[in-house]
Image 1 (spheres, rainbow, N blue to C red):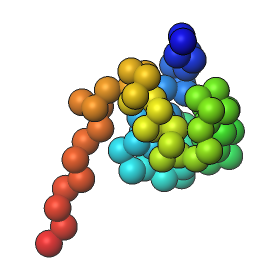
Image 2 (cartoon, rainbow, N blue to C red; image 1 turned 90 degrees about the horizontal axis):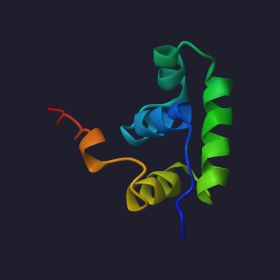
Image 3 (cartoon, rainbow, N blue to C red; image 1 turned 180 degrees about the horizontal axis):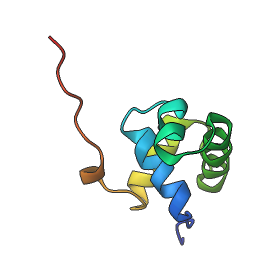
Length: 78
């Protein structure tokens, strides 16, 4: 089975989401609205056959569409 293809924006947005960023944070960094981010992620979920953000990230990792190295470990809070 050939994995689905993601656009550059879909992939970039999914990596930002995988790193724990909210749609509002992603929107600020990309210079778009939070609604636009929601639309990109919804389209990405459909393309991957995912029900939500967590499943989309897991599937993208499994399919090799994103890499573990792109996901940063959270900084410990004291």
